[in-house]
Every structure is written in structure tokens, then in C-alpha cells.
Image (cartoon, rainbow, N blue to C red):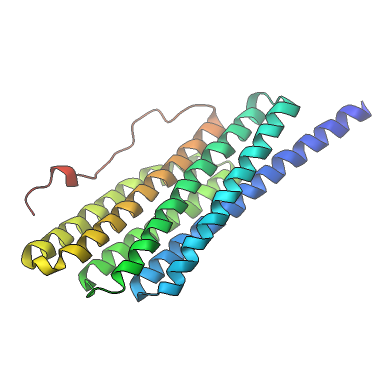
Length: 236
């Protein structure tokens, strides 16, 4: 009996450590979203460099999480909710790693944009997108810690707001390019930045969906709304 309690306690510590690593990774991604946005708005190449370097730490954490999760599965043979926890942590870490990649890409384009005439009109829309995605990420991570499926569902549905913001930024950039061809290069960079932010929102939404699965054991029943209509927008 004593041996069984010891094994159970060690297993609990393994699961706790795995989740601590995930929260550390989530915190780095939150910081990257803030820093990448500030670097863009202020043409801060040093801060953009910091974001690119931070992506390495995010990648390393994902690798560490995968190694620890694999060890837990191999040595502990978790079942039911414990197995769901391990698998969910792995899937969330994969989504967070992709968010870090998008912020690194954003930072690279920020360096290029720093040497071009600014397109001020796109700034407010991009900042709103970044703020919303950051709020969503914090909420999704909170939902994970609290095992709160209701909060996760609220986050899941907020992705539609990010899509609407992206559509608005896309139309603004399209207008600038049509009005003055000299804006095209900068606007194309900004469009890819907006798209990266929109895709980051998609991955954050996936984090929320993983939380719902963790808590309920079921996948989200309905397809979440997507309002990115730019592929069909030819009106300008």
C-alpha cells in the first residue's frame, strides 16, 4: 500500500511538472504577442530581435514537454482523465509553438517595415487584433488551469471577432494599394502580419477546444464560425 501511494504521488508530480512547463510556454507566447506588436508599432528593431530569439525558448519548451509526456506515457501508462491531460498538454504545446512561429515571422517583417514609409492607418486595426488574441490566449490558459469548459467555449467563439478585425484591416490595406502603388510593398508586409495574427487566433481557439475536450471528454460539437472572407473579396 505504501509503495502504491508513493507511485501515485510521483505520478501526480510528473503531471504537475508537465503542466507547469506548459504554463511557462504560454507565458512566453503571451509576451511574444505583446512584444511583437509593440515592435511593429514603434519600428523597434531591437525588440523585434528579442521576439525572434524568444521563439527558440518556446521551441525548446515544446520539445521538453513532448519528451516528458512521452516518458509519462511509457513509464506510468496513464488512463482515462490522466491520459487526456497528457495528450491535451502535448496538443496545446503544439498550438503554442505555432503561435510563437507566427510572432517570429511578424518580427522579421517588422524589421523590413522599419525601413519603409509607415502606413499609419493600418496600425489601430492590427493593435486591436493583437490585443484580442492576447486576451483570448490568457483566457484559454486560465480555462486550462481552472478546468473551465464554459470559459473555454467563450474563448472559442471570440475567434469570429478576430476574423472580422482581419477583414477590416485587409480592406484598408487593399484601398491603400489601389490609391498609390508605392504603398504596395509595405501593405503586403502588413497584410501578411495581419494574416499571421489571424492564424494565431485560430491556434488559440484550438487551445480552447482542447480544454473543452480535457474537461468533458468530448470534442466541440459544432463547427466554429469563420468570418475571413478576404479570399472572396474582390470589391476593394
